[in-house]
Amino acid sequence: MRPSIVVSILSCLCLILTSAYFIFYQSDNNISQFSEKPDLINYDGEVISAKMGNATQKAELGRSTWKLLHTMAAQYPEKPSSEERKALYQFFKLLSRLYPCGECAAHFQLLLKQYPPQTSSRVAASQWACAIHNKVNERLGKEIFDCSNIEEKYNCGCDEEGEKESLSL
Ligand SMILES: Cc1cc2nc3c(=O)[nH]c(=O)nc-3n(C[C@H](O)[C@H](O)[C@H](O)COP(=O)(O)OP(=O)(O)OC[C@H]3O[C@@H](n4cnc5c(N)ncnc54)[C@H](O)[C@@H]3O)c2cc1C
Ligand SMILES: *[C@@H]1O[C@H](CO)[C@@H](O)[C@H](O)[C@H]1NC(C)=O
Ligand SMILES: *[C@@H]1O[C@H](CO)[C@@H](O)[C@H](O)[C@H]1NC(C)=O
Image 1 (cartoon, rainbow, N blue to C red):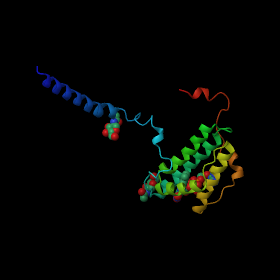
Image 2: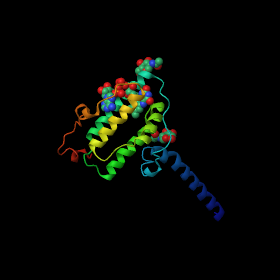
Image 3: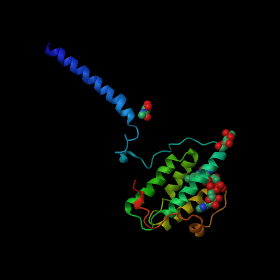
Image 4: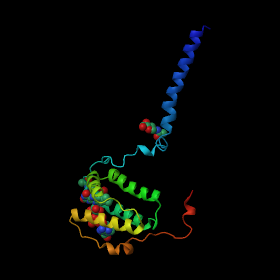
């Protein structure tokens, strides 16, 4: 065989294998493809979600989400590490992009700019969450909640001793 034919065959083979890699391997790998690139996240980006027209669905989603947020704050560490503080801050920033009621998310982004998430302790986070919920209540013409009662309403629901170790799967 002439060398030029060998080179051609090898080139073709190379092309086919490269294509196969992109078609088969990458499409099987959707879950992990971004896992190594957390720095690509834009915490201050635009709202991602669409408008949620249905008022019933909007209210249901709101009630469930507030329950999640207040419970999360109630279980947040009393003395968080700086990494844990970043996690809570970024969670709220991303929530304001991804909350699946786009018009709510847009308002929430403005609120976060004015009242940045407080992350220094459990009390700070719980009081901040209560205050930001009241800001939304105010805009929607709802009753204002008394934040001095927040700890009675949302308990952390956690087993204090020895639970963290058993979390690693
Ligand atoms: C981030 C976010 C943004 C939203 N933006 C909009 C929006 O722009 N437009 C819109 O129509 N809806 C919005 N909602 C939904 C809205 O806030 C309500 O959840 C929804 O209208 C249902 O109201 P609700 O009266 O059942 O009580 P919710 O406000 O859902 O509250 C649920 C329960 O929490 C308790 N609670 C009330 N206030 C507080 C407080 N300050 N701290 C702790 N507990 C409290 C009360 O027991 C109340 O019954 C948003 C929800 C969230 C999570
Ligand atoms: C991966 O995502 C692409 C679209 O981005 C899709 O066509 C493909 O089916 C997905 N593969 C798997 C295994 O989910
Ligand atoms: C709004 O959402 C509720 C609850 O999901 C549903 O029962 C209702 O039919 C919806 N209304 C309209 C007008 O789509």
